Image (cartoon, rainbow, N blue to C red; front, side, top):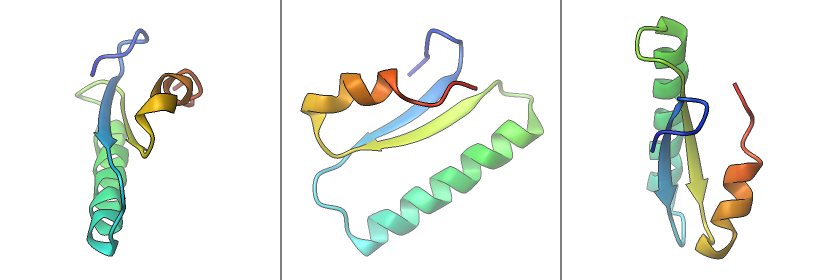
Length: 65
């Protein structure tokens, strides 16, 4: 999803989180950090939402970068 600040957000909507999911999320965070460090693909962020009813609130409070 492209954000208003032109960053790209990788968003996962997830219910119950398993250990495998946690490992995948940690890998995604490392990937985003590497892409941001490289700098050739713009700014990226990763977020996991566990309750779609509060997704809008969470998106408004994502750190700006």
